[in-house]
Length: 362
Image (cartoon, rainbow, N blue to C red; front, side, top):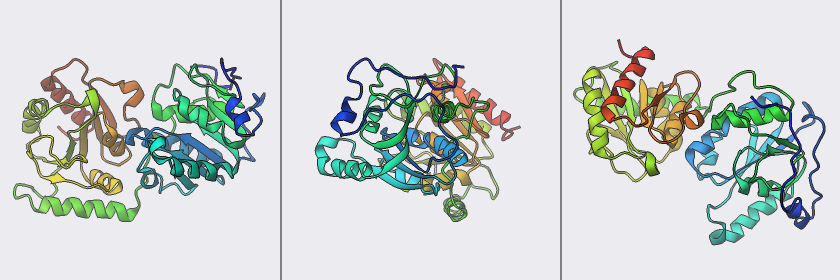
């Protein structure tokens, strides 16, 4: 593991230019860790718009609650569901959702920036180890301390710049590592896993919705276990219906006593030819509640997998292209199946083994 103590960062080009344009003095490297007290207003710049990335910010929010329990947190984001994802975090009081394409909605973009620039923050954080956009943006805001990762794409001074570590690799853990390193602390554990924090009312609603769905299935036995299947993914991670059929033909006989339901993707089209009873909703928290009410969840690496990993349902994520070390679900009840260069039948056998390890199959 790299030295957890922050290092100064000297950018190769244009240091402090954005801050000078914004009428602000450049950040100067601090020689002491972030203070344990006196941080009351925090701004996080997290401009990735994917569901998975937005959920993987939650471990940092939990860590901030632990380190600065009385602080007010603002988030600038491009996630269209950020308000739904972070509503369980009472310290998050201000979410500025920027448009994904700022040229098309320039007035809205500028209004959000003006709103954020009116506040003086004790701490601004760029939690992404690679993004150049979020690093540029935090140069625009007034803050005593600026925390982020060092790197070739990171132009602009920070008071606390942290080298990217060799470990942890997990995108969720990197935010926690960053804050601890900035405070001069070591990464003694994996940190908190991602969380959505469903309310008791939402959990009850999820059980009710699932019970209503199962009541319409003649073959379903009361108390039979339920596998929630999400068969969609994006880009090269996606597999077609034929791939899934091959996997399911191996899995179904082993799950003869189970009921399988399909979670329908946003476009409203089943990925497995309407093979199973289905649940469809654009409400991200209701979807999570239905997953939580299920016995287990299965999918490829995708945003809904990260959503499932925040619930109490054992979550199995199958990885065939992306790095499981970086994107795999972690924490209690979350499992990774490494399916790289494997046929779907072999992956199905690994899923069966994982269900056995989880105590869900004999």
